[in-house]
Length: 509
Image (tube, rainbow, N blue to C red; front, side):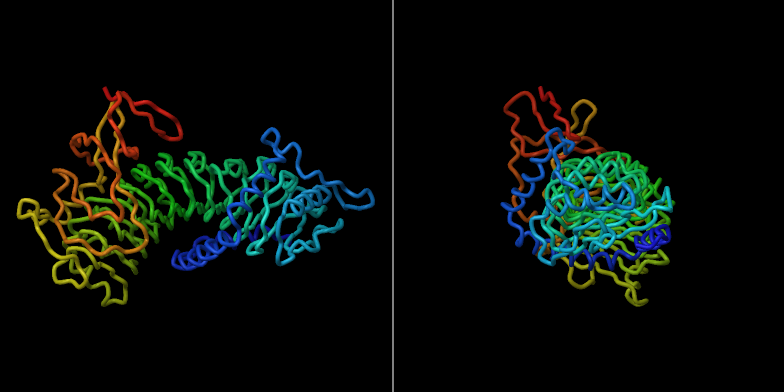
């Protein structure tokens, strides 16, 4: 690594802004590699490696460590390089497998000549050399992160993606105060969100995708001054924290988890910085239309494979920089507003596998100008590859004098059975769609939002049995906070279930 670390950081930050199309291909490749990694590293191996790490953590802070003994005959030019030696020797001892022999030359005092270890002048003292970066990407190494790595206090780039590291991120990483890029993606880390990374004061790029983290997303994540957040392909659940709009990121990818409920209000606050947001393959039910229209710098908007229902808001026409919009595999209906297809930079508009019944003429003109329009398996008359037409009748027809501008005044409403207890709204949402397209069911026009929730396409698996279905409250045009409800039995007088990682009790009497 050269001493011009700041210029390198600027270049990396520019890379974050690359189009998400390239990211899709990379993610697909990474997902394949990830699948192979699971075959190569068995669950028993993961358990053994994680146990090795836990044995070195008596009080949760790694008091024991790997017990590296420094040869007194080794000479180091400064104490920080000696600490780096201890950290890297401990890491080498924590590695179970290194088939490419990347760490084969990790011995001796000259740590700056270790393979994939990079040194540069210290930021606080240019007269001394320190370890400033480690890049073990695609090294096929299996092991864990020992507590001694916290001795690398000058490290700015930590890249270990596409390996077989297990366990958790040590609390000692809180000492890495110069950390700028932290990439541990495509490994087998587990447990709750690694909160220690949010204590790194200079962190800008966070990538923990393709791991096995689970539980809630912390609110602190969206208060952090980050430029890029990649946490897709984990096991995060419950709702996205309400302060999402406080994040200054340019790119955020939360896809392929099990996030539920509404997209929080306040998303419009991200307008000055947000360029790409990918929320596909979750269980999200709605978003606030007035917020969406404020995202004038957004180029990629992907909410495919969710549980959105209702009508598309005309306010999306305010997203003047939008290039890619994917809302496929939802339960949306009604007209597609003309303002969306009039967006000047729109190149790819995907609305397939919904229940739309009409689209403006300028939408059908998109292919003629070389842009992509994918509207198959909807209810469009005279369009190819649509659902078969079965109507309830004129009383439920979406064409009851409702124009696209009228329909756009309603929000994307949740397609759930909900009831209200005290001041909290609970819902029982349907299962998430898988990535495998299902055969299109007959085209049934859903009722308008002023009536009962729209009919849903049949799920891929049976819904869990529910012994009681309370009546739905009057619909609201505001995005409500909803809590996913498991299969219920109302035989007792109370119900306990987790909410925001806390246990609450609801009195049903």
